[in-house]
Length: 80
Image (tube, rainbow, N blue to C red; front, side, top):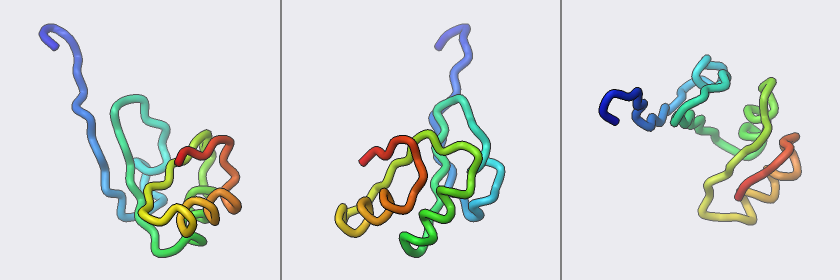
């Protein structure tokens, strides 16, 4: 944008779930991606935050990925 401020959309591959970039509320086109080994670990990571207004699960197997996560996660809104 000529004469304006533009921030490029950015994706962070976060190696530690407690890294600041994964825990801070960022206002801008930023996505922090935290990988996990199983659903229990994903739920634990997702529930260990002071935020948690929404969550998204990207999976190739909805029955295995979304349903167990939705049962264990204390989020107000689950997008799938």
